[in-house]
Amino acid sequence: AAAPTPANPDSRYSLSLICWRESSDSDAWTGLEDAEVENTIRECVTPYLDSFARMPPGLCVYFEACHRDVNSTFKGCRSPGEATAADGEGGGGEERDPPVFRPTVRVFDFSRDGAFLPHEERDRILERHMPGVPPVDTIATLDPGWDAAAAHRVLTDMRGRDHRGLPGCALEGYVARQGGAIAKARIDAL
Image 1: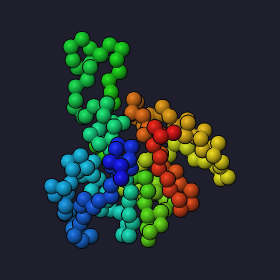
Image 2: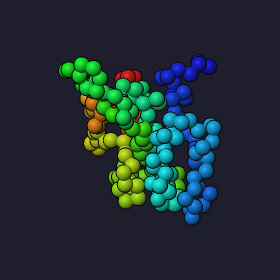
Image 3: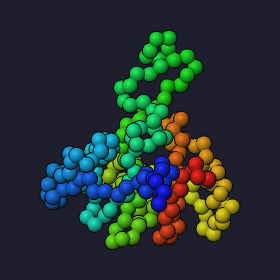
């Protein structure tokens, strides 16, 4: 077997239980302070614990943790309070300061009873039960009856696009859904 590399999904993605509530009547979360939980993941998840607690029973949320020490896309961003070129000697000149990026999560899906919910339902759940929790952006929708050429045009258009509100932070990949099938691909693999 080949050694994991950054391009190998097994080395990039994991599914793990990092915290839970003993009962729905409790406000206390267990597990988040365990040594196995990485600080970067803790920083991403902690601001949203109250939102996760408001989720309807039986719902499973799928999200990505976004942190400048996790995602290569955000490494060039500043942490809140980090000095800018304009703060230092000589001013910023024509150089643009990198955007500020706070650790966060971005929800890309929900499921119930083992089935993914329609994309529109994701947005309704976020609005109703989890306001303030950011979704993964929808950039393009392929029309019914799409073909490989249409998909290629959309994907090619995504190259060089930045994350919304984060100039200089290029998109890393995309999630494609059709019916019950879901696929994720990295733009650098195109």
